[in-house]
Amino acid sequence: MELDLPICRTCGVQYPAPRADCPICLDERQYVGWSGQRWTSLAELAAGGHRGELRAQGEDVTGVGTTPSFAIGQRALLLQRPGGNILWDCVSYLDDALVEQVTALGGISAIAVSHPHFHGSMVEWAHAFDAPVHIHAADRDWVVRPDPAVVFWDGDTLELGDGLTLINAGVHFDGGQVLHWRDADGGRGALFSGDILQVVRDRRWLSFMYSYPNLIPERPRTIRRALALLEPYPFERVYGAWWDLVVGTDGAAAVRRSADRYLRFALDDAD
Image 1: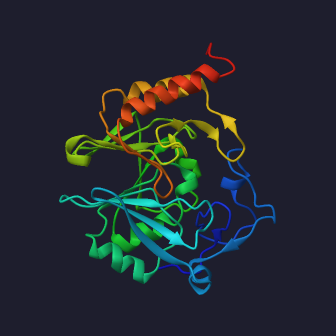
Image 2: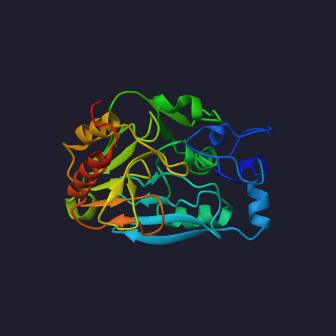
């Protein structure tokens, strides 16, 4: 494990070598920390008391996070399946103890990450579990630590097998992807959305933003395209990006009515 590689303290993404800035944070969808660009590493995080945290988030779905919270604070999700576990999204932190805990749950056969803000230390995770990382090709330039473990795909959808489908919703980032699990929740289906489709505090609803911290709204045409791509996929639950932010019932209808509400408030719905 590469314990000393630099990790941005604001977005939590790991880089292959020291550098002066973090392009992900310089982008208008993110921001440079108010104290300026600051770096850490896996070794420093461990020495500072950070640890992995596992917590149930749904049926056969285990959250993988960091305590105390670090950077953006998202948690990843381990989808536990007889055919091999999938890690959806990623976090910055990883140590031997966390590897052992995840291995005890069946390990990881593949990783998929919704968008660059959640890349975290995905290459470390890939190496630890000998698992490929599936990233949409439209976000290729945002992969700041290139590695053979990172596999790029093109198009609107990618079948991962056994009822798992990556969908290029294109919200937030051009390559922003969500994951549909057909067999989740007793066959009722689930959507794993990260913050491509953001589950909000009123967990009956979602929202759609180009930039969350800078409050830049997403384009109506982008939202309509995402809805059209999701239409063939039924799902009861929607798993957002943070602990316990889950739409518990009627998830597909929640996405549709949330999009309708968003579009009603859009300044220009003519595009």
